[in-house]
Image (cartoon, rainbow, N blue to C red; front, side, top):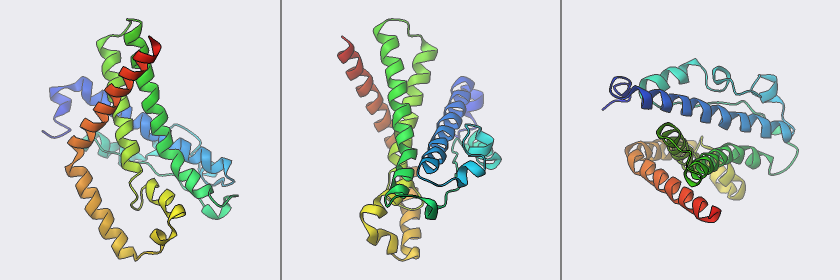
Amino acid sequence: MSFLSLLFNDPKTYFLWVFLVIFSVSVHEYFHALSAHWQGDNTAAIHGHLTLNPLVQMGITSIIFLFLIGIAWGSTPVNPTNFRKRYSHAIVSFADPFSNILLFLSFCLILAISIKFRFSNEGLSVLCLLGATLNFVLFVFNMLPIPPLDGFTVASHFFPSLANRNSELKNAAMFIIFIFVFLSFDKLYAFGNYATTFTVGKLIYFMS
């Protein structure tokens, strides 16, 4: 079943997914812009990326793809030559997936509190479960050490040889791993769902 068919079969889930992806990607890119600003590079700020506006952080093409196939992306301009410290580029790159972990934990905490104190309802539960799972998947995906993902930039600072490899090998590796991820999305999503329920369960336990 295609993502677009979900609009007709389960419109609530369709629009909830669209909303959560837009929100999560916008926060992801905002953290990128903000961390770059803190590390001395104002490129993102100059281009208006210190915002949660999805039209700025994602662009209209990405949003259209999201409505059609359920997948979107964002882009934030940075200039590493402006960074103040040796590891600034790695810090800025890690800020993106770090934002997804924060969102993951936030959704889990809200869900755990709502269950613990018995004010949960179906809408809130679905929102938090889907939001947490999505952001866990985004974290894992973005931390893969392949270009152009954030994990590659972070890994390159600790293993400089990665950045010096032939670009054709980089592109081949990127293509193969992207195909693998897309073909294994169901398993990755199931793992994210497990991580969510496990984390919520632990939070409820510690609140007892």
